[in-house]
Image 1 (cartoon, rainbow, N blue to C red):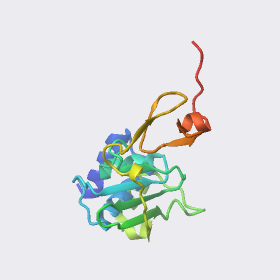
Image 2 (cartoon, helix red, strand yellow):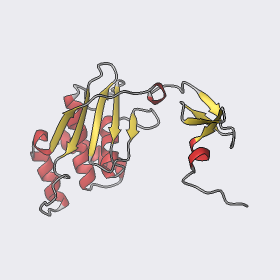
Image 3 (cartoon, helix red, strand yellow):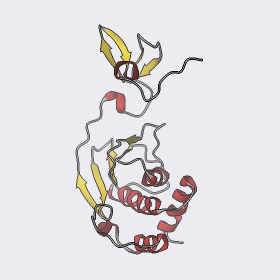
Length: 187
């Protein structure tokens, strides 16, 4: 079994099935690790990955790189683009890799099997666009323990890593300051 097939199985097991996003995300993650001179199936402590989409491709990138939100080595950017940035905290090297195929306005329809076959055989440099980028992480975005914690002066919930605002000289969590994705219901 070739390396792509092994990694595709790992990503498929993590995600629950194989689809186009898992197939291309696997290839993209393998390519990113290779360009960053990082090994597959090894813990790359210095790697942070920025995902620009919250679709299937993201699960493949997480499965192949081993980065995760809980470790703070996986950052979700919610741009809706088939792109991922690989950042080495030690060297400062950062590469943004985007899916050329996803950016074609008109493309041929192919079966999942045909797509996987194409991704297996097509060199990564033909599938992806690579751009050197600069990343400037703030202290509160770094992996590791929270560098600060405060309690919201409105809801009294703990807020870590500077993810709060100051209103009237008091800390206020973002959901109290700007509104939340949820609405409390009276019991």
